[in-house]
Image (cartoon, rainbow, N blue to C red):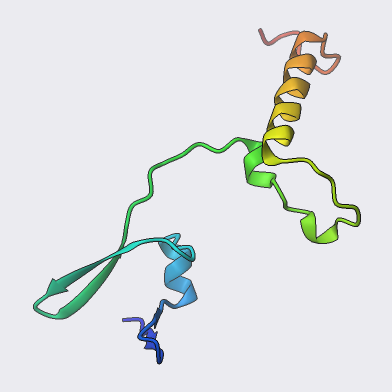
Length: 100
């Protein structure tokens, strides 16, 4: 059994190992279920969303950035899509001729 802690504003801290295991992020909803043994806290299942690579990597190097650009997430996704489409239309010198 893992223990948490209740703080003065009645906020409960979920230990890091459990947050990682159940992918609980700050602001995520949890269900509180009353049981004979006490209160059971269950993470609310998140709908499975498929993020593009650009969405996953967005902002990853922001702490190292020296100049602030005015690019939005939408701009970066569009540029990524355009770059991907343009490389697909070009002949790829690294393409394996034995695979079709």
